[in-house]
Image (cartoon, rainbow, N blue to C red; front, side):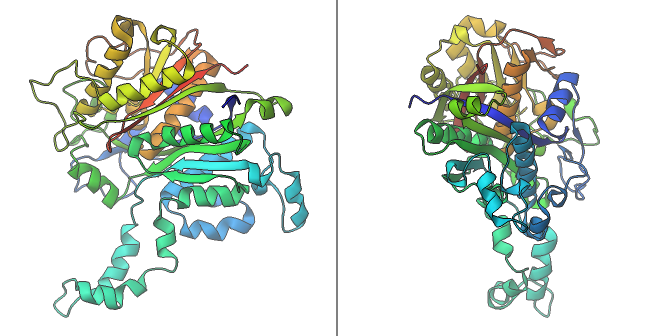
Length: 455
């Protein structure tokens, strides 16, 4: 695996806006998109703050001949389609989406990268059905007394779902629509491992390009849990912080603070275009960063304490999340770098105390006393926990830290655990030769990347 792999396209859709530039500017300015939920009536929930993508529709972003397909796109898919479009534009590519195939079908030959040499690996979540669609069909399966009849539902109620209903909510539909729109016919896969999904997908694209099975890959993650079913699942899992009448999410979500009441949800997508360095150099396009290492690990006994937001008083503050530790050590080994060569760390900072403290323990074990001088960058207080979209957005942020040689501002109204450079602070320039991007997840998977400046 001697082929070098670089990042030539960055695409992001988040509560801070559309485009990697909007994410970067918002993060550097210390802005937060955590505010009262407006996409649906959340008044019955304990957690009523989230990060929403405002005034966004994929209908405005897809080729004219593909607009009808937006009707069968779940919100998660639309976010990914938007991020992919931004990444393609950033990379200066000609793909199927930019060609008028109706006028000239043969124009597909003018794509920058041949279809068979473009892959796609995108992290996704368990896409929640829209309540209005589902309940409209369920209402036809009521008894004369007005109660729901499961037998009636199986006999005829399901037939009242909209045509192609299932195809709207399958997790692999995220990658499906991106590949169709851009004509990517190479290796493709979907990974569903919660917050780690995006980085795991980037790792798969990295290996595919390294072994010369593709020249370029779309990769990252996308998800929205800002719907009735998505928010309910996270609340039942004990992940969400109760918000009461608070309107400022930064007062609720406190990264690496053992007293933090929990996390807050966000929706978003972060997609990168990974490309062989030879291909990028041949077409003379700019390189945001190079991926020099990837690692993964699984937490068999993760100290997350599902069902409670905080952690017990006797919780060992030095306990390491074993899977998270394995992932970052594997990534550094793959990159052939030592802990003292890492200049900055990018992670989620979810605000879920058990998760954050497990990550902190792993970082302490990996970096030792030096950890106190390695700055952390995290996006939890800015855009919340975007689940499968989080890893991709973290990778976008990490690449921009390397490219801009700048650390974004940190928002933290809590008290970060000792030994971490995670307190509040403004954006500041700094020399970055190696950055570690890492994410744990609700499901126990962990993934990490090491990035360096592209050359």
